[in-house]
Every structure is written in C-alpha cells, then in structure tokens.
Image (cartoon, rainbow, N blue to C red; front, side, top):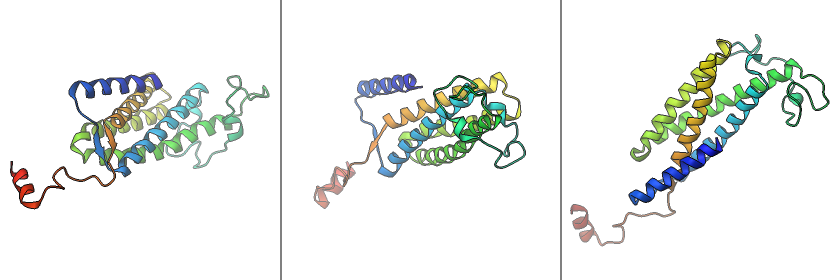
Length: 208
C-alpha cells in the first residue's frame, strides 16, 4: 500500500511538471478532512490486514449484529498482541474465539466511521470542478468496499469478494493520495489577482 502511494505521488508530480501547473487551492477545512480521511483509511487497512492474518473474517457471520448480539463476548487484550505466533498469545496459549471476535468487530466498527468520513469528503470534493473526478472515484470505491465487506461476512468469505475488498482498499489509498497531491491549502488572506487594481481599471481588465 505504501509503495502504491509513493508511485501515485511520483506519477502525479511528473504530470504536473509536464503540464506546468500547480495543485488546486482548497479551503483549509477540506484539506484537513483529506488528511483525516487518509489517516483513518490507513488505520482501517491495517485493521483489515490483521483480520485477514488471524482468519477472523468468519468470527462474525451476521450483520449488523455479531453472534446474535450488538456487543458479543470479546477479548481485546489477546486480540491485539502483535508479536506472537499465529493463533497463539505471547504466552503460547491458543487464542480464545472472543479474541478473534474482537479483531473482527473492531474492524467493523471502524468501517462505519471511515465510510461516514469518506462519504462527506467525496461530497465536498464533487462540489469542486477541479477535484470532481476524485470525489466520484472515492464515492464509488466506498460503496464497493461496503458491498464486498458485507459479502465476505454474509457469504462465507468468497474469494472474489475477498480479492475485490483488498483491491478496493488499494484503489482508495491511490485515490486519496492522488487527491492530496492535486490539492493544496488555500493561502491565508488570498486575494484575487485584480484586488489591488483601482475599480475602473479592474472592470476593464475583467471585461478583457
């Protein structure tokens, strides 16, 4: 994922240099939302990798509940021990099923937040003509992730849904990186290029 992001940065910067243009200035609030969305997506990708590594996808096979409960039994202390053998705790004891449930459910709960933030971000991007394409891609990929994530849970982790879910995450990382490269913070106190011109001259220049 990091390699994809770096290749995307390189490709966008080369294109900007070839076309002799700068990134689009966007409001600081939107720029902050972009960075927040990227950080949340990075966290969600890491959680998704942890779910897959621990084979925790099938710990919950229902939606929106899990094991018939909104808050099933979970063991978070075992779930997020990083340095251990697969399927075991650091002490060498087999992982409890409640730990796998905690891994799965954490990824699911985080997905709600990521989906909401990226949805708002997509809508705001689509309001800017220069970044409308990125907004549409982001919205479409967010819906794909929702569909394939549900497919993994409800259909028993089919290979097609699993591959599409991973590919969708990679594509979203590329789109967010692309958007960050194609945007920049609006300069503080930025004014129109004609702001310093006296009114009559300004009207004449605008007419030209």
